[in-house]
Amino acid sequence: MQKKSPFRVETLTFTALLIALQVVLGNILQVPLLGKQYNFGFLPIVAAGALLGAPAAMIVGGLGDFIGAHLFPQGAYFPGFTLTNVLVGLVCGLILHRCKPSVIRVIIAVGISMLINWLLNSLWLSILYTSKAYWGWVIARGPNYLVEAPVTMVLTYLTLLGLSHLKLPAYMALNGKDEIKAE
Figure 1 (cartoon, rainbow, N blue to C red):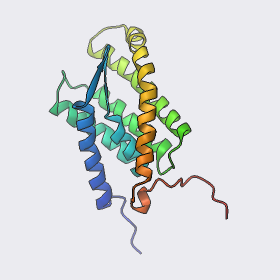
Figure 2 (cartoon, rainbow, N blue to C red; figure 1 turned 90 degrees about the vertical axis):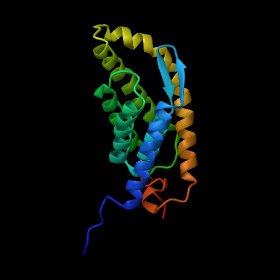
Figure 3 (cartoon, rainbow, N blue to C red; figure 1 turned 135 degrees about the vertical axis):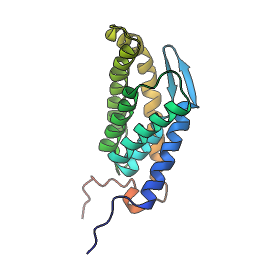
């Protein structure tokens, strides 16, 4: 009896496509805000987490950030931002994997992800710019995250809703695997 490999061709291909999409949406399509840029690079990470699970979402977040930072440099590469994207992938994979789109799951996943982004990226900026004003970065960037959170939640929910209507292989379907079914 052979064991099924976790490295299916479809999974590897889909992961690679989501990495490419993360590079494009995270680096080319950006909206400038005060003190920060809003981009759509989180959507491929969400899709990877929901469809493929935490490991794939972590790879999409990490490699997407790494490749994007080298293809579209906006200063020196700093691995802390890559770590942030990996952790966001972990959160999205743990909360959203193969579950039906749900407002509460989206609020939890996006809320935790935004908190990780806000606190860690403020830390990375304070280290990168050799300033000791970590809390200054946190306070200065807070209003942007308050504006960004509802938009991110709506876009995340709509993305998951769209993905739930696609005809996907059974191991990727957003079918609510964790729900108890009445028999």
